[in-house]
Length: 532
Image 1 (cartoon, rainbow, N blue to C red):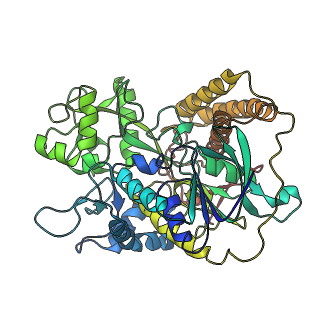
Image 2 (image 1 turned 30 degrees about the vertical axis):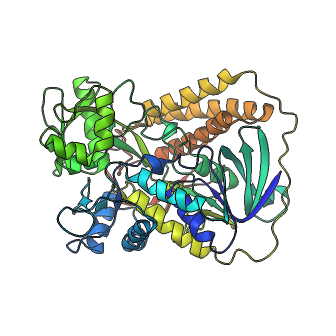
């Protein structure tokens, strides 16, 4: 079946839904999301949105903090553009009905502080900020006639017209309707990737199951320019408990006085950074990894007992309730935590308006490499980036309504048959995530990267053979995508022979001035460093 619209949005997080609402003012919008519309990385974001909302703060200070944490790879003009868009983005969310926390005894929003920030500038809704933002955006989308949401639909590949004799241009996507197993053709004048991150490429992650790098993998296969995939941020503090799958312990806890300790009560962050527990995430994650390996411990502990029980229950109700469910009383005892894969700082290269290098294809949110984050993301800048770039991309696609829609060929499954060996998918899935964690995780080495490269090459051959023989399923598509993401991360990490930001290798433990460049990669070619 063929579906047509002016705008096709793949993904339903903060970036995709904000774009859809703006684009719907001028044309029809199809939003494709592989599970429920509310299921996205945005929905699980706890901390908040970084924005200059306090008269004692400034754009210059927010930009300086972002650039410092980016370790020389953030683009100052992009940083300034995003930072200056923050207050308007917050005000628009408030106008839509977002219920952010307000300050007691005075007008204005309650602002907290997180690692790497010099000021309190993080707007939040308790400890479920992402869920609150997702709620207001979903409600607005549901109430907009020009937007059609296709839940339980997953993009298979972008429709790149040169592969069927046309120009090098994206004109939509082939999309799997999971319930029926049919692949439909979605044709649009502008296609927008807003598929989020790829945390599921690692064994341990704070991300939900949907975060399998679909957008960056599809863009890679279509010939888009990708950058900086070696910079994958590991959140320092995920709850360590056998029943607590992917449950994040927000950085905001450390912003409110939390102290990281070893099992013996030793507060260790002062040995690793002058900002102690409020050091940037890459520093804290490596410090925890170092201390766990040094002591042989399974986890470290985040101590919040210096704050009153009343404050903790009021400020962090979701985290407190989840800990209590698991027998942990954060008001009286420290919380066991470990690092986990959290945020993809690299991605599809875009300009200041979300345009990729392929005509007709735009990208916004975590799937992109805009130049904001550089080699490491400043806490709570991600929701901000999604909001600002969604608005800019919507403005940039004002004129796409002219001209005829493309007429690409329909999906052809050829002689593919239903799978009778699903174990192949689960085995390969587990193997990729395990070797990525062990060899391409928080700390890397040349030897580990070579081992990972050999394994991913072998697995990609197996996946390719399986893909062409069998009808596509969501599990197969996700496996194919995480294999492509793994390949990009390994290749980019192998190219960067220094340690910078989120990329730390024991073979080259110091940064090098001649490596203060982006790592660029295109499908079928080795990565290279460039000033972009």
